[in-house]
Length: 548
Image (cartoon, rainbow, N blue to C red; front, top):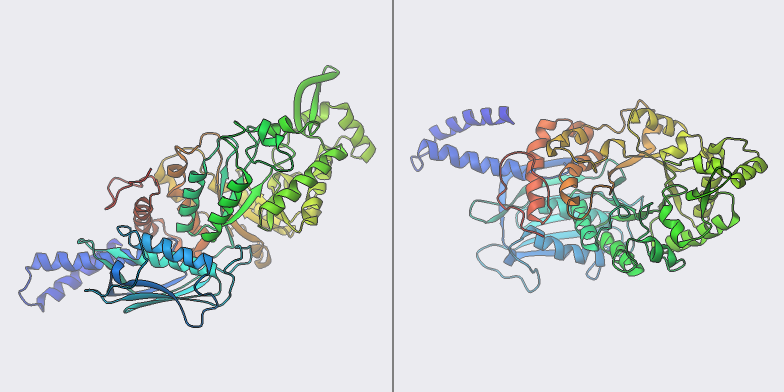
């Protein structure tokens, strides 16, 4: 950037020589420099960086009184398409934050009307985003019109987000957009954010605000780690005691069926999948409060100690309960994936229980508790498969050689050589979600965003076929020290660094120095949109955070 402006200085000096005396040399220099800087910020402010982008200094004025979204004549989607209609309303307010409504006829005043015409090839207006949904779009901005073409409504959403970031204001508050052509699509299909609502309950408004920010960064999966040891806030209609006895509070700290539907519906309008996780056999202490005989009684000195360990894998009633629970979960959550967890299983309670040891002897497992966990996981995977869902497990299940034949997707999360783990999992022919380098729950200086940006998911030395098995990655925000008071600033804008790594071309986004001014600009956009994003350096934004 510095080199560019040094060259610009020479160019401006030469240009000034041939100009009239209307401006002083210094005024002329400052005016042109500011103009070009606005143009550069317009292009560089798009986050994540599009696949290809061509922009011109030619710019067009926009006015909220003469701005119009419309469907193209040959678009498969048309007025009444719930996803696109809702997006038109949202993005008018995002593009013109000082104006609240896009309703009413065009008002032709000093500005010429500007139309954003949307064309969609497929009529998938009432569907949910899926793992194979196309998000590709083509955007062309010319005088008085922008043309946005996409295969699906999900591609339209990504294109509208990009267009909204191209719009900028000058020093007098007037809106402009530059002549631009963009062709764009994501590098990875799966780009997720994990929220943990068990260790601290997150109100719906906090989840909704996170979904907003996710869409601004083009994340497309909300991994809802909804229950865990501390609490069971999911209100099951099949097993109401799970939340009645396992939640922090049975009325105020639960997610009702209506709440869950609202989250899924809200996320859908942003093109975001909602992927539930019900982690077992470990991390289930809260489950046992509302479901007797589910957890394993621990023994000490020849008798029960009064404490309980992981889910009891030896009882037929365990699998009857799980089958009924997951049948309900699969009907509530429309996504094709369900996360089964499977991490951090402590074998000590199983080892202490004489009934468990007798069961292992009967099954021929000997003293190998990995085989016992394999037996449990295999049974749960079969339940999920029978529901036509795809299972995801944490890498522990793979690491301990547990039930590999039944696995489909493995999430790599442990510290250390995560590239080594990705290589091993893909070598076994399984799909991978990478999470290891993107744990943001621990506090840290905001300027360490670069460590999350300089992650190369495919730098594990695999074959082309192995590379294809890496379906994406996700940012994990565990809840031990995170609640509604600090979630947003801890996530943003650091999570946006991971978002660009998962969306953009790696070769075009390899420089932290080149990314920094764009991320600064994007952070200011987040602030203006009501997202509490931490600062990256000393300075200020034109529009500071005014939200709650």
